Image 1: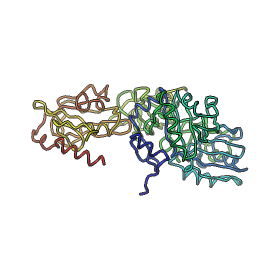
Image 2: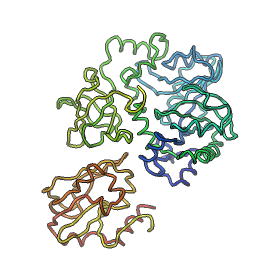
Image 3: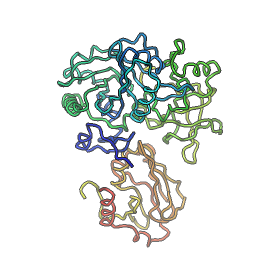
Image 4: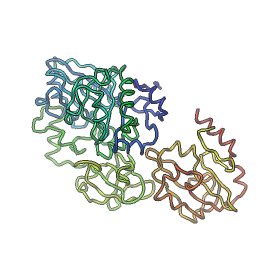
Length: 363
Length: 132
């Protein structure tokens, strides 16, 4: 068995007493104190995440824009330098290779931020399908990534960063400096809260981490592990590859139509997705809430009127709502808000109900 | 071992339950080591009063944010009381696992089984082995 990899912040996590677990081949902090306390810190104040295990695949050259246009389900012809766009990389079948954020740093320069579990797979996919005149590089190992999320994050970051991050709109980024280190700061995140993702050179990540925690202490900034990262994104109903998305699942099934530009087409999977839309999408991802105590978890069967109809893809207690929530696939006819479902947890059928998503935050 | 509370008066199972003899009945819960390993406890599933279990049999489930763990009967007996407070306040198990976080009370069917459980020193050694 290969040894687990470590991000540049491994020693920081150990020094903070984090519980470390394997994730996507890395030894990562699942929690520092308590998942519930870390979750609440992000909802109420701010939290700092090490997400350096994620990948960055760069495309440069005259063929870069055409390559991204072919690979990504979003139109990038109107994506300007300094803008970020969320989209999917799809197979010809319409199944999802990965969900990514695409950054345009220049006319002929892009990078994709990709899930840690998919870095090698995505790199090979991009290389295979890139257009001529595009140079593709996997710069994951030389890149550090910190996420600063929560209502106080702009106030924490502003004194340390140039240009002023408060001027950034959502899905915009700027290249400058944070705590004396070269950094790219984007107003993006995976928590449903306001916040920033800060890209730096891998060797600068520890200094940035220390500077941010120090600067944010007065505002109640604390480090956040992957446990709370998952409960936060679930409350925001954001998909997690390997759960809501996989090679056999399309973005239309996952409720991600607005991130798929079928009018433009021209990207891998467009034809299959058009056919699926025309024929009617047979199954749909829904958000649900348990009506009684219990916790739905990935893999639990979903039933309706006693008959199994689907499966939970993610589930957890929602610290903000004080009830158990989850995401799962059901037949399209059962996807309407208010539809009663049962979650099969061990030997019990726990009543649940389809609810609007996101569970927390703006709709 | 400073980081885990292991009260000397109690007996312990290898599955990290504690047992306390109380006037012919035996109160049971999970240990400080167990609650720390689990993290924030969000749900405890306990059996109905009147159900009987053999020593070693699963009698319930404790769930944290990330994990689901079976609870194993440290002795054989009939459930005579269940801690109803845990339904609304599962966090009591984290806050006071030997006190307000107690889980069930058994009427033991075989008093000698209590002696077969680990004493505090033996349990501390069992925790030590797994913490390295």
